Length: 122
Image (cartoon, rainbow, N blue to C red):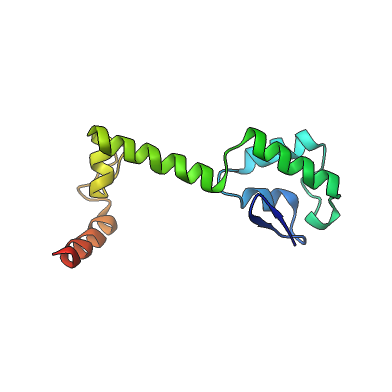
C-alpha cells in the first residue's frame, strides 16, 4: 500500500477508483489525470511503476487542490461570509440551506438537529 499526498492508495483497486476517493477529485478530473499520464483507467494500482506514481503525485500537487488544502479554503470562505455579515454567512451560522432551497417543508432534519444543539447550549 502506498500513500499519495497523505492518502492511502489501494494497490488492488483501479487507479480511477483510487483517484476518485481523494477529496477534491471527481470522475472527470480523475479521467483527465489518467489521460495526462497516458495510462488506462482500468489499470490497477499495483501495476503502476514508481515513476508513474511520482508523476501522478506531481500532477496532482501542481494542478489540483485536494484534501486538507481544499477543506481549509472552503472553511475560510465560509468564515469570510460570516465575518462580513453576508446572507450566505447567516444561513451557514443558522445551519439552514444556503443556496435558496426551500426551508419551510424541507430541511427539517437539519432544523431538528439544531434544536437539540440549542437545548444543550442553554
